[in-house]
Length: 274
Image (cartoon, rainbow, N blue to C red; front, side):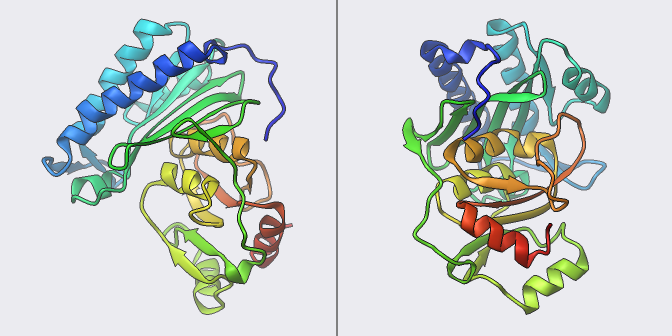
């Protein structure tokens, strides 16, 4: 768990924290869940998909946040690059929203997607929420105050003692061919999954639904809230360059993570990270 609690923010107050959670849940149900299996998707310039749920969830969430906490700038996945950069550089801090993470799943009727929001102030994440509308699960964290799943404490722990016992959540698509081949041909774990929502991947590691994690390239709106949730749950992470995953810039980051220090060290050793 991170120990830096020096930055003041409204969500240190439990009533404000619950108000934020309730607002995000209500919006996710009306703007995202209500459209599930009733959407068509268009392709963006980067090849990813965009649905009405993405655009409406972002628009309504931005309005909700600005009406209640107008002191913070807003960075959304569907914002322009110029808007994202400006928000990230805001002196007051900014919200970081992924309105629908797992749009490819959402668009074809696979019930594994999420809404993710985090608050960053002075380069530090101070609060994060990932809501899974299909399962009605809300993962939350505030800096220095731990993580929770449906308001019950969430601790990243596992009975798995070695890498070969673990289930790994691995995104092969964004790994180098060399690394992907090594993992596929010299499999170090018991089983592997790839679900299609980065935000939920981080949370599921925090909940012990997988014990190790690997992703080659994710945006800050993909990982911000999930990173804080795993951090506050007591898990471990780094980039493939053995640097902190969190970077207060609109750039893609790799991510290596595990539930315990022992597994994290063994996973890094296998990946030859030093």
